Length: 151
Image (tube, rainbow, N blue to C red; front, side):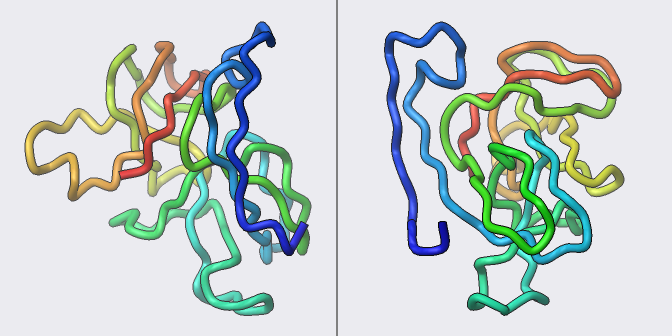
């Protein structure tokens, strides 16, 4: 849906966490050669300008993570538009290492699409471009639920 700028949804009567909390979701273009999996951390891909600068995403995050925008909210096929959540609950996010409930998470530059615990305090939080807070714990390679609050 190339023309849709964004949407906010709220469905209080649904039983799962993703559907019961307010969410903000935007459409981005996957200009890569592979499908972006649901739940993968994504960043703006400034090398793809097919539909304008800032519309394309990828999962391989650079070391500083400054262009991270959210999590794929569905599987996004190559050369297609898809939903990215920038605020709200996202289930099925894959973590690297051990992540505790309440820990800030950030995109893992070493593992495309995955997150790691940020373990930061004070001013460091703003410098690390954290993506949100873990609502469930996970071990290495396990999935967790994240309260997405892009910083």
